[in-house]
Amino acid sequence: MVVRGTNLVQEACSRHRTAPTASAALGRALLGTLLMGCFRAEGEATQVTFKGDGPLGGIQVVADALGSVKGKVGDPGADPPLRPDGKLNVGAAVGQGVLSVVRSNVAQEKPYTGLTEIKTGEVGDDLAAYLAESEQVNCALALGVSINRDLSVRAAGGYLLQVLPFASEETLQLLERNIAAAGSVTDMLHGGASPREIAERLLDGLGTSDGGPHIQPRYGPCEPEALKERMKRAVALLGPNEVQEILRKEGKIEVSCEFCRETYQFAEDEVLAAAPTQQ
Image (tube, rainbow, N blue to C red; front, top):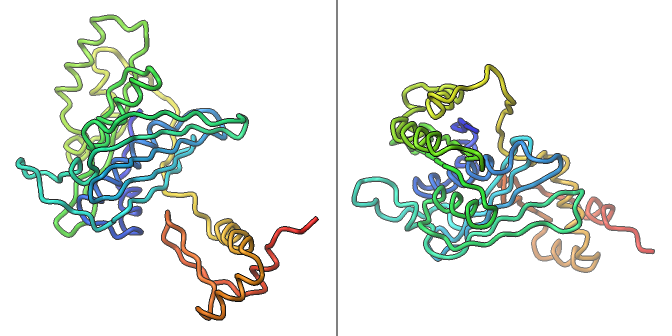
């Protein structure tokens, strides 16, 4: 699976107003979770959480099987000094800690949760290690986000190449050579390569089909109407007295979404009308 997600990552970074290193970390996590979550069972969601001790303050991303993904970081302004090679130091921003992955489905009673230690904090390495350790999936996972001098996202993408149990040693060696020859995801995107062309480079000598499933990645879902309804119900659960106390102190009821950063205001009667009916 290959994703080109430049616009998606740009939207996320614009919404959260992230500094360059935070942009790279959030972008990689969005793309990695998207690759891990798409094309799975209908109604399934994948949630990835990095709980590290770095200045970023953690990352949380949720993706569905249809290409929608949303996320947030603890401190959007986290931007530690560059690495000695001049690259953004995502590993230092994330720090050491625990990576958790939760896979849930509306058809299942309990979600599956896997935990692993954060290996490098570079996101892609950690997700690949999780897949190998917790889900016994051998794969090559590459993620890349490059930032322009004006702090906009120049390119963002990634690929997930899963090795099936019956793959021969010759196939594995060919894949390793192809991955090394292909270079970084961002370099391929800078050169104008499409997702299909990237897939063809990775599978050179093995062959690719003419078609295949395709989805359009997007940031969300945070549809305004559905979001406002959930917000009203959440505030209503505080009870009439608490709602009136908020109005007395603040003069308004205002709620913000941590994922899309949209803020909405509600009148007292709107909130109380959304309260659950008492039996």
